[in-house]
Length: 134
Image 1 (cartoon, rainbow, N blue to C red):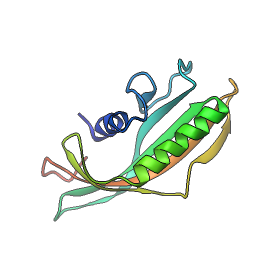
Image 2 (tube, rainbow, N blue to C red):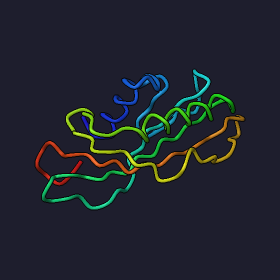
Image 3 (cartoon, one colour):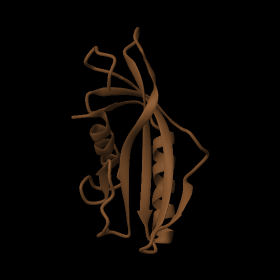
Image 4 (cartoon, rainbow, N blue to C red):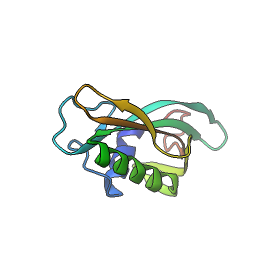
């Protein structure tokens, strides 16, 4: 399982949604079956630490949905993930999850009338393989 898949599963275990229904890895479906849904996307991070086998991975949480529900869900992700540290995510040990802004950022409304929000994190995790890659 890749890091981004494990991170999505962690979000499910934190009660933020269900992978494949309201949490998606690297995409959001065009049609939503719930009032709001989330894409967990792996983005650029920073170079890893060769000594401690830590990788710092960029994670973008993209939320789309009905206006009130999208904002509320985006805020739940921010509140839950910004407090995450020293826990196991899949086979990785997550050191910390640092938000890169002070809250969800409003991206606008799409053609279907759904609001979109983005939250970006830098996630430091110990790579279990010994290789300097997540």
